[in-house]
Amino acid sequence: MSTKGVRNFRPKVHFTPPKNWSNDPNGMVYMDGLWHLYYQNHPEQPAWGPMHWGHAVSRDLLHWEHQPIALHPDELGYIFSGSMAYDKENTSGFGKEGEVPVVAMYTSHRPEDGHECQSIAYSLDGGFHFEKYYGNPVIDNPGLTDFRDPKVFWNKKRKCWSMILAAKDCAYIYASPDLKNWEKTGEFGREENRVESTWECTDLFPLQTEEGEKWVLLVSMMALPGKSCANIQYFIGEFDGDTFRAAKQGEEPLWLDFGFDNYAGVTFHNYDKPIYLGWGVSPEYANQVPTGEFAGLMTMARELSLIKTERGYRLAAKPFGLDHLRAVSYPVADGDSLISERFGLKVQGQSGKIAFSNEKKQELVIEIREDVIRIDRSRAGAWDFSEKYCDKLHSVGEAKRLLSGDVDMELLLDVSYLEVFADKGLETASMTVYPDVPYEKISIQGDLMVQIYQLQ
Image (cartoon, rainbow, N blue to C red):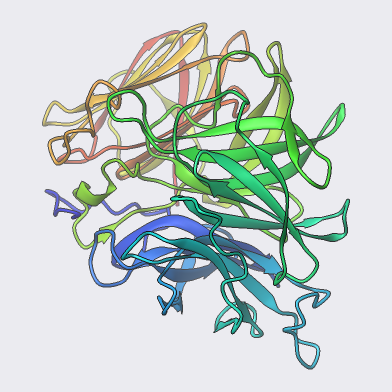
C-alpha cells in the first residue's frame, strides 16, 4: 500500500483525492458550466480495494470541490471504470418533469471470480445523486476474462448512442437507442498494429483536420513483465457508425506519452472539444508510492488535436485552462535558484540539457537534441519503494521529435509530478518524482533559452 515518504508529496495544482486511493478517471462530463470528474476510489485506505466512484466538480479544471461518493459497490460487485451520457433528449426515459437525465455506464466487477458486465445508473439532479437501473446488467459478459470500461458517445451517423469498451485484447463497439438495450456493431484490434497486452479504458472521438474529419481511438495497455511499460496507444482512422478502421500509420505503434505515469486517460463527454485527463501514476507501482494518506492524481487537463507531420497525422496535446495560473515569466540562467515547488518553464533552442537538483544531490534531467527528447529520473529522488519504479524500463523516457528545427517546449513541475509538452504538443511526457527535499537549483547547458514562471 502507499507508504509515507520523507515529506509531503501532494501536488498543489493537479487533482488529488482528499485521502486514500484513487485511480482511473471515470464518467467525465461537462454540464451547466461544471466539469464533473468521477474516479476509481477506495475510501478506506490509500491502496487499491473495493472500487467506488469518487466525485469532484470544477469550473476551471484546476480548482476542485470534493463531493460525496457517487456510486457504491452492490450485489453485482465493485464499480469499475466507465463513462457518462448527458441524455438531453431523454432517450433513456429516465427523465421526469423536464429534468435532463445523466446516465452513468460502468463495469460491474464481481471480486470472487472476476466476472465483468456492464451496468447503468442515472441522475436527475445534474450528476450528484444516482439511482441504479433495476434491469442491470444491460450487457452481460460474452465469456471474456477482461470485459470492461465502457465509453459512451452520441453517434451522429446512426442517430443513436454508441459505446466502445475493452474486450480482453481488442475493443468491441455497441449501439443503443436508449442506453438500456445494446447490440454489438463492430470490433477493432485483432490484426492492427498488434501489441500483446490486456486492453483497458478505450475511447473513440472525432477530430477535424485540413483533410476533413478523422477519428482517434485511445487504448490503455497493461505492461508485459520485463518487456514493456503500461502506456496508452492510439490509432487514427475512420468510424462508419458501426465500427472503427485504422488508417495505415507505419510499422511502429503510436504512443500518447513517452513518460511512465499517464494511464487510463479518456475525454470529457458533452464538450465541443476533446479534453483529456489521465491517471497520473503507473498501475505497475501505484500501490507502493510514498505519498502517505493519499494515493493517485490526475494529469493536467489537455486539449487534443491532430497535426500533420512528415510521418502523417499525429496526436498532439496542450494544457487546457492553464492561462490564468501562469504568473509573469522571466529568464533563468545556469545555476539560478528555484523559489517554489511548483513552476513552469518555457524552453526554446536547438539542443542542450536542463537539470533540477537539490542538496541531497538528487537530480532530474531533461535532454534536448535535434532528433530526440530524453527525461532521466534515475537519480531524481526516492525509488526503492518499488522494484519497478526505476528499473531499466522506467528510468529514462525518450521520444523521437516529429518536427525539425528548434524545440519549443513547456514544462510543468508540481511538487512530485512533471509534465512536458514539446513541438506543439506532439511529444508529451508525464512522470512522478519524489525528491527528499524540493529541487532548489536549475542547471542549463547548450543553446537553450529558458524562462520560468510560477504556478499561482
